[in-house]
Length: 309
Image (cartoon, rainbow, N blue to C red):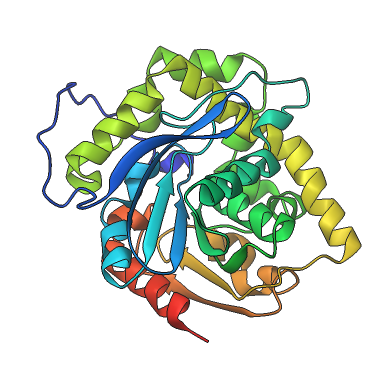
């Protein structure tokens, strides 16, 4: 998410009435995935499993319009809060921020899917969740049947190509990596930082997101995600690139027409081509948060991809 999308919120806290379309038929629970780490998760449907991974600063509820459509198409759909986000655990960090690496988050997701009885599954990730999805596909290729990445290029590729345009648009990557100051700035007024419109997001999704960004422990953990990104995550991507490691499953890239992926990288498929031999992609007519702004189009693309040979 770019800072241009952060607008003042100022919505009053409330207990939203249940929405009849808010994850209908889904079960919500907490699942232990590692020592001291428990993930908040919703899952529902039946059929081939698909796990959907949110980005920053969202929670799993960002998928509330997409997940039921994918489930209705004949899939088991799993939507967790990633480690550090929402109501999932926020483990202590270390000087290298490795507890918030995408490798650690991917291991959580693998353990979650195993706990729910799924040995092989499709994974789709948006924004920061796309980095977790990529790491899962690279680290556990036998488990990932199909990979979908939304609005991203690999962290190592983004930093290798970083220029003045990237620095101007994505300055928050570098600000968030600084010690202490970003916590103080964000927590002084989380609504001013993160905004969010319940009319677009949906009232219950907005309430879940707003509770998360007002929680100091969650804000610190989300920043640890970015700190890991500039260090251990970049190193992992660069090591894979140097070793010639590639994604072994079919891969779908979807990007938002009204975001800046194509502006920064030209053809985003050209960036991913070195990583994914079996690659396809398309634009979604949306801003950055496509699950909230274009849920039907996104769900249709995910369903068509999971049905493809």
